[in-house]
Image (cartoon, rainbow, N blue to C red; front, side, top):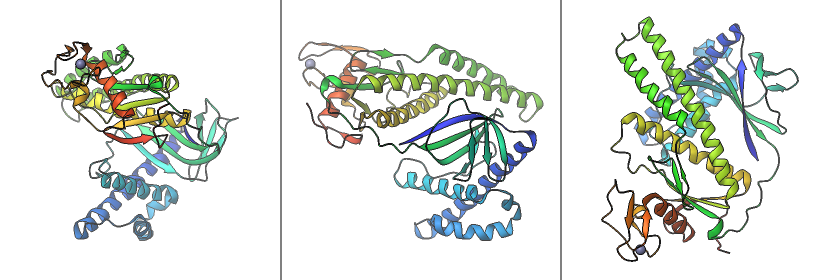
Length: 379
Ligand SMILES: [Zn+2]
């Protein structure tokens, strides 16, 4: 099984300069490859392959000798990332890939192999860069796979190492309605479970979001590109970083407890209902929050031998009575509670939706993907 371990790096000044060169070269190769792909895509609807790109990379390096200062496999990592971006585009998971900019929040490059980890001395040796001080706060055992070095716009460096521990994923257990949980993702609450538990966004996150709005207003009053503008911009980047840390921590704890306490987790495909009335900022932030939460659910299900059932978006999750199946079209968006006209059961809107998500998933209705067990058998 593969697991990723992330550590903070503390490069020396001259090492930072080499890192900057790496980030620049990777952006250069990525954007060059994207140009080639766009050109061939326009000509015959099919983009040039990664293999052909890597062949042309040889010529590119002859024309731009500075690229030779960068580890060649890291350069090829850029064409691999590009290929992945196109795959996701063809599968309709992503928009058409865009060009990379120096201004992006995170800069990164891959190191597929030939790096060393020294736990005793808290050092990692990278090809063409050398030993870099790294806080190796936890150890691992297994085969080193691709490492990714990244830098944030707050000047912090990280390395994420993919490790294959050589072990098989745990065997999936059978499941029943009682060990299955349905999750309804929302804006009022971060999520509501079919057991009736409502999980709110953490308070520190709300405070940071308020601060972010305030600081962004200040930025808009400053002259673009001025010293004060740059200072304010860094301040905002740091708030973004804090938001990200709080959210990551919250999502890790929540996803772990949900996965550990249940055999099967049923969710809807990314749900954007009820978001239209909200501010653009709140929208984009919650949106990012949900998809990264789902990713965590997915890989944790694999680690712990659990099953994730994903439903296509379906409106009835909020409108069907989970007790008798009556379809109530009269429910308004703002209505938090309703009483079923048929069986007279009183429903909390979100809990009812979560119960429907659980039951629909177990019935294989509207099921679009299953992570884990391939066949659903009710015990
Ligand atoms: Zn009913």
